[in-house]
Image 1: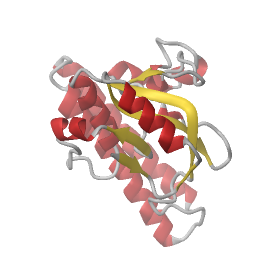
Image 2: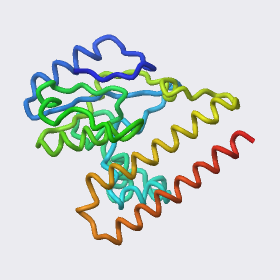
Image 3: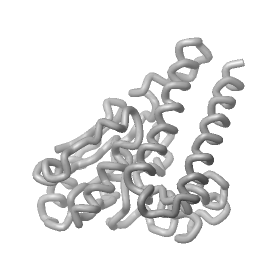
Image 4: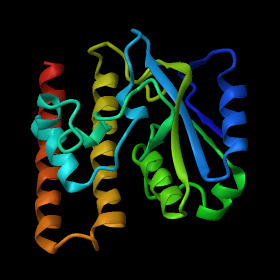
Length: 215
């Protein structure tokens, strides 16, 4: 089963090669490819680590940017791993996800508690819980016109402002849902309080940035 964003271009051999790789590896539950943005840059979200409290802190505090190749500080996007070799990752963006149907059936497919974002992270997390691998396969690629499918455009219209607000709020809410579902019982209560406080502050900062952008 292939989950593919509508704002993408799929190149020759991308499907054939990923399907063949998935079929030949019984320990792999999901494969993604290299994803480039419209300007040719690498989309970091296709090569992700799970957002543990430490990784999220390093990412949002800027430590990950200071040490982009560090396993300790750049785990949010697995900066220590090469982008030109086939290897296991934690998770990928939902723009291109090829999964075995029997695995999707086993884990129950998508969790509808995630409305707009976070469902891809949750899906990969549950594949890992099923003792299977999520694999980054950079021998083929797609181009992703990020934001097009969500309706975000480079305009300062009132409609686009409200769309960006909804997107931002949905992404923040996904953080809350993911932590509560997968990490709340794994970490002390104090860590949970700090995480939720941090998420709330991030929401306020991003709302302020949206308002500032459209002034």
